[in-house]
Length: 331
Ligand SMILES: NC(=O)c1ccc[n+]([C@@H]2O[C@H](COP(=O)([O-])OP(=O)(O)OC[C@H]3O[C@@H](n4cnc5c(N)ncnc54)[C@H](OP(=O)(O)O)[C@@H]3O)[C@@H](O)[C@H]2O)c1
Image (tube, rainbow, N blue to C red):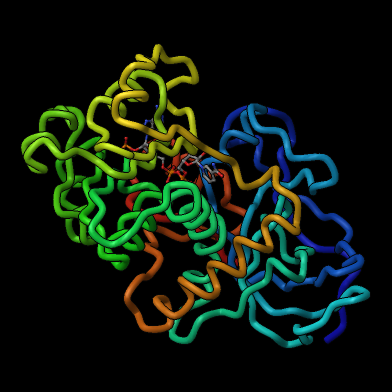
């Protein structure tokens, strides 16, 4: 297939609201060493894209200035030194940016085959959330069968993934969300109990439901006022993993609780890691999660799709927080 010189992309014209996402023409990028060019069929939308648009999450050095951390599509060109991938392969890829476009360059080690039975829209919704959940809940958080797991933001793209993976692992999952409907949606995904944090105190609910044992692993995107409560409800040897700061970055911590319960407080971001570090996550996800996707035991939850040119509408929807699961752009 011939590669055109120009493509439509959606760029951030200036930091600001969703109206700053504008379709424009740009040169189709060329794949470099160990990179491939993907003709994008669908691109996932993630909360970090919203933060980037607002000017609060600049792309790492060397990354595209375009938003978009994940795409699915067909490989149409190979850079130097690529092995194990071929033109025509259908892949889903984790990007450091550049996904809101008709064509995107991806690092070869961060391309995974589209699993059997998974559509391009679903495939585009996988890398950012599944890689993030894997490296935080399982790698850092050491989630294992029989654990009590707490997922905050249970209906987010990250949350819907974390609930399903933890349940598939044999954990008992509690999930918080901002409405009754969303709490029930968490339960439909396998959570033992969805907690509407607007009407219920998650510490009280979990203390009662676990007969005081508490939570082994918490995946937290809120921080702020949740930090002390996460520690309060943590089990002996519990792990609390912070992946975002939606509720604020500052918290007062009672170090005595960490000592007496032998807790681990940790956290991470995915985007700033090197390709080699992300490739390790990709390998672990391919080994541990791809069989679950192929078997239909876990599946990305798609809330809505928008054409690429309507990326601004997709961001508006995300900022309402009314969605359950992922929002995806189609090309
Ligand atoms: N560390 C990493 O590597 C990494 C990677 C990807 C994403 N993330 C982070 O993980 C979080 C989820 O990402 P996503 O793409 O899955 O997002 P998303 O689908 O937009 O979900 C975010 C959810 O967080 C909840 N929330 C709680 N407090 C909030 C607040 N103060 N403002 C806005 N929302 C709030 C909202 O649900 P309720 O209304 O039900 O509370 C909202 O639906 C984001 O914060 C993102 O930055 C981190």
